[in-house]
Image 1: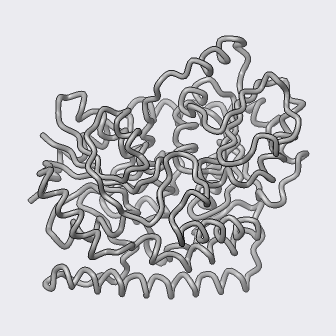
Image 2 (image 1 turned 30 degrees about the vertical axis):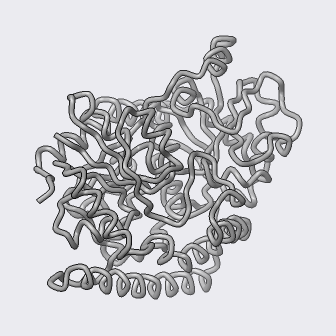
Length: 438
């Protein structure tokens, strides 16, 4: 049996998608990943085959820097980073404007490339990143069945009257002006209409007999998989989803890191882990506030600086573990608390180990994810542009001294995520429904 995984050339997307292929490889099956050159080493770490497939203009091997991107993508990244400094609405407005070039990149060219890969690999099953719209369009138009994996907060798939790009909820720490929200929603509606028109034009070019979509952002594959803990998702919204399975979390295996293992062995004291992921680590100003808040903490700190210069953190204790990139899964397994931007991998992996979070969301579905974390009582959230050192210290103190309710909730979620891992849920859902290439 052969499994084909189709992923954008971004580490944060490939890690959880590749983790879903582990049961296939363990069962002796062939696993092939179609992605770009930037993430080739990640594919090799999993022991999978790779075929080259470019799904977007940019790429990200684990830490993204604007100056390392292709022409055009560099300026787009700088514009995005600048928008995050102006706040939630400005960031979402910027992302809405870039949506068609980001999510439906060269659909006809990608369609030919995707279908060429399918013809060569001849997979029995296909797993695709939900945000790889051009790839999903190709599979749909060619009649290939596939499993569609939503890697972000489930609001990345709009339901009911929701509009893609307009968060259905956000933490109370954010105070957008009503007029700004009206303008943002109107813009997202217009983007949805334009995006759907582009989707339909490409779809009908590839398959003139296809049915046009009324909302391309709401299109899903034959099996819908949500990489998110069901316990943190609103029950009413869950009832509105198409037929689906919650994976909980798709935790990746990691190669041992000798320096990290030595640091962990030096002291058994609990750890606070800090990371803003591969993109938002550029916000060194916010990382510096976090560092200041933790400097007087008696806990050990593991600090992933990403694309920021560690010197921008200011003076930090020598006992801290500070590196551009750290083995997140390994460290979360020893953590008492995580300070995060609220990316899907950080959230799901922290909850897999029952780790509470301080969430500082910057963009896209991070706002809805942070709201879900606060509502579930497993963390606190602040506006990264206005949070103070004192606010962070108070929140950290509260979360490091959890109430019985917090501890019970974290233990319950952790147990659920470990009783049925995302990889085993995905394997069962896909093989049970016979999602094979026609």
